[in-house]
Image (cartoon, rainbow, N blue to C red):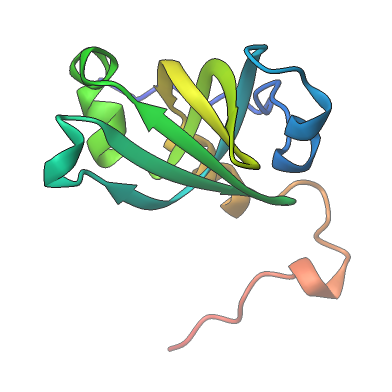
Length: 130
């Protein structure tokens, strides 16, 4: 029987969006978050803009055409992405210029896994409907 491997329970080591300002321009960083926006304007010559959201805010990501081609599937279908790249600041806006993109959407399934809190009423299983 072919079974899909269980996703890692270890969250990726990444900076949260609120800590990006602490890093210098052109620093190599890793960020992760839910994809809340993908844009591919016709005037952008193949550049894609992605906005990720984490627990502290949003991260703007620029994906150049060659990176998009290398990580096309993750860019198109990923719901939760881990992106490594370089920080760029322009007019008080911080962007991450993507170098690698990893689809870690499988980690979203971990939100449904009981984690030893069954005695806490907030995490009690739902009653079955007959």
